[in-house]
Length: 65
Image (cartoon, rainbow, N blue to C red; front, side):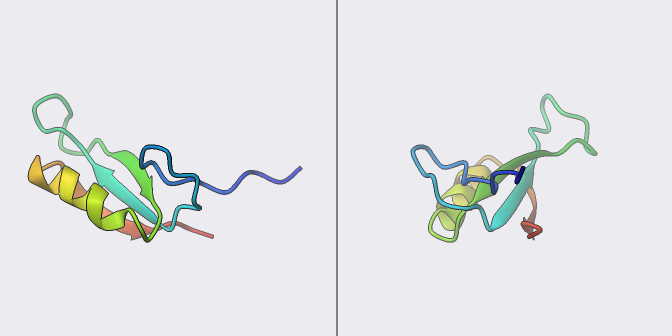
């Protein structure tokens, strides 16, 4: 059995994820905690902007193949 590839977290997108956007909300998460949204190339900028505007984005890493 083969695992399904990771899918972009953007609403309605079913494209394979290429990027892992690691974030946390400093008001409710400890500094070391990371949540992850996945992004395809088309949605990376939008999701990065959304998290960045809230000062939630911590790292962006390529998704391991």
